[in-house]
Length: 317
Image (cartoon, rainbow, N blue to C red; front, side, top):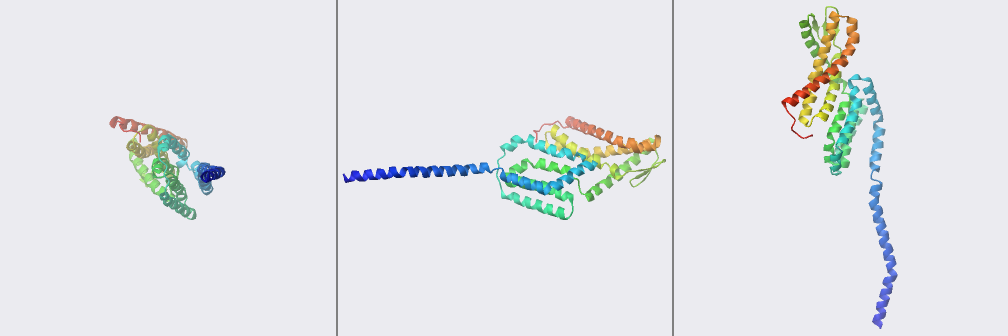
């Protein structure tokens, strides 16, 4: 009987403590659910905070960049570049969703480098450096939060953004002046063949009627930058391999130079055989648009010839 009493007492204690045990289990279960739901609740909060900081830091820089796109004809294509980069990301949405997300601290080094570029650009009053820092900073953030594989998938959209950034003035001048001399020399060689005697002095072509100066705006840099950007867009949509896209992009350079030479020769002929005022006014401005359209047609012809000589066999890169 004593044994039975002990057993009943033990069972009664177990029954008396069982509600407490169940409550503890329920509490622990609820804590685990809350902790599991916490990342989902605050998963996008860090990204929202970083986005807000980027807006605060770069809104003045971005505003000046948009103003340059609007006021500098050489970079009027800059409005298309962010749209194209966004399309590239949307076009790779399947491969991006299949890319594993592996955050790493390795990307912090690139973030630090971007911040240093930003500080140097702000205190050195160099717009190109501050604008390039944004691209490096975006690359560092992608690397840090999503991993190196994700950065490799997005490297081309990030590099495309460079096309929208005006190059520094010192580099711009080193490019435009040789183009001025090259265009002047070739035009001076062609005009005598068409019955127009000339005398070249640097970037100035002396015609019998007047002097024709190949100014910085007539160097061809404007059509070169725009045509190079459009050649990259064109190659991405219509070519399948990186090598063929590179050939199309490089082909835009001699096409732009040749088109500018034809424009200068046409202006010289109009000055000699028509009206100098109209040649330097309406014809000069209108011929710029015409030659750009012709340059696009030449780019298309280069693409067709490339398809005939080297048929495409690779998969889309």
